[in-house]
Amino acid sequence: MTRATYVLIHGAGDVGWYWHRVDAELRARGHDVVVMDLPVDDDSAGLSDYADVVVEAIGNRSNLIVVAQSFGGYIAPIVCDRRPAKLLVLVAGMVPSPGESAEEMFANTNYKQQAQKDPSTRAVFYHDVPSRLATEALARGRDQSGTPGKEPWPLAAWPDVPTRYLLCRNDRFFPPQWVRRVVRDRLHMTPDEIESGHCPALSRPRELAERLESYRAAYTSTNEASGSTRTSSQDPRATAPSPGSPRAPRVESRG
Image 1 (tube, helix red, strand yellow):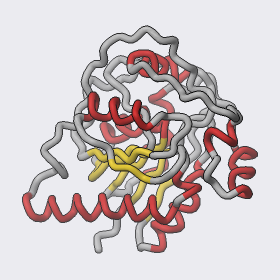
Image 2 (tube, rainbow, N blue to C red; image 1 turned 180 degrees about the vertical axis):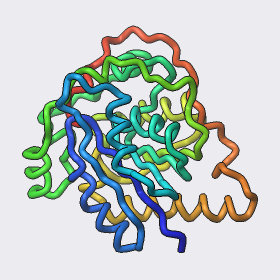
Image 3 (cartoon, rainbow, N blue to C red; image 1 turned 60 degrees about the horizontal axis):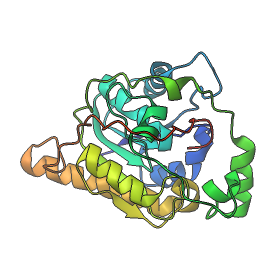
Image 4 (tube, rainbow, N blue to C red; image 1 turned 45 degrees about the vertical axis):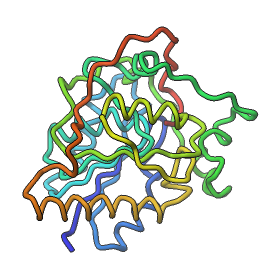
């Protein structure tokens, strides 16, 4: 087995601890894992600064598989543009388009959160997470600065790296029907799905690690067989969205 380096990027208002259960699963399988705390509570930090933190954490490691949760989808492609990566995986991730801020993405894709009986952070994000872990996640959460959510995504196109998307079927924050449409329109693929809420790294860490490993194995097998740098014929480059009218929610909570 080729040893991979999994680079795990958390979402808005969160910390690297979010990945700790998946980290353990991947290390048990013999891989290196890179986890970092993004500067989410720093109003002076923009998207490039977030990517700087990831790139610095990677150091001189190679054989990278970059995995991003939620708002991490705005950061991971920038990292892949700076450092060679074997694979990019979005887990309930946002899918930016060139020049589009995260707030604009919500508006341009007609995002609308489903009505919730209980709109609390615990109920929306951690409803299927073990109670003790949900409590700790809430305690570790940080206030998310509005700065990166307003900044235009800086890349001219999606990076030239094989991309996979894992949709969370029981997600109360990113409605599955919205995610399927966004992934189809922007990444030109059908997402894979996991029976989880928005935070599978806490609710289903082993299953998530197994999914990541299956993506790695498929990439390795295809690359060795054909010499290709892609896992499919689908074009993973982002396309410009159509303008939308709904007001964009701020990227200030977990996500």
